[in-house]
Amino acid sequence: MISDIVSSGRVRFAATCCTLGAALLGWTTISAMRAPPPRHALSALRLPMPSIEQQWATASSDDLIENALDHDPFSQRRQKPAPPTPAVVGHELSAPEVLHLIGTVIDSSGASFVLCQLGAGSTRVLRVGQEVGVYKLHSISQGTAIFVTSEGQRLELRVSKGGS
Image (tube, rainbow, N blue to C red; front, top):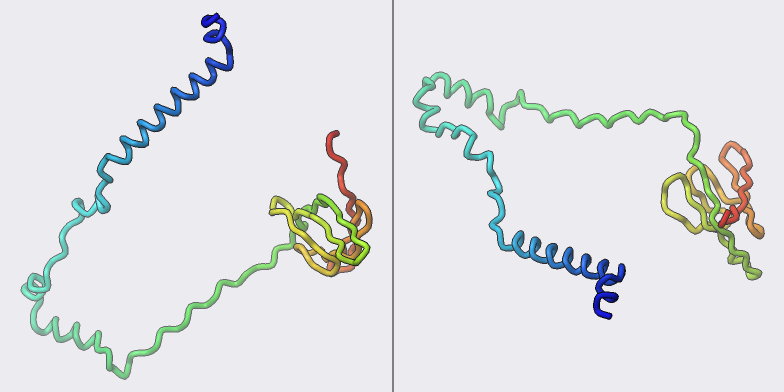
């Protein structure tokens, strides 16, 4: 009788899951106890910066004066840096993303809406007059929605039947 229980596939599966769970618990416990790696591991490889005294020792007084005059913050020659130019965004002429109609909800009080998805995006709820991508929802009927683009192109979508 016990051998029948032990030889059961469900019992072996449960035992395997318990073993894996115990191994995962042990691994996470050991990982939590381990000291974290140093934050700046590469800092030991960097060369130290020369101190100001070392820089002054190698530079002549004339060089130091020239350097100070070149970097005078109150100089009349200083100019405000030009603002960065924004990147020009090119308008690509590409085909609009595929619009999928997931479902329609018809309400007699006028609160009808559709569930739709543009490309790989998330599912959205739209009411008549709202837009998704280049499409504007024009009308809703049972299982069907009509969208219109800004160029006047009409797109009629039907809810696909599941289970086929």
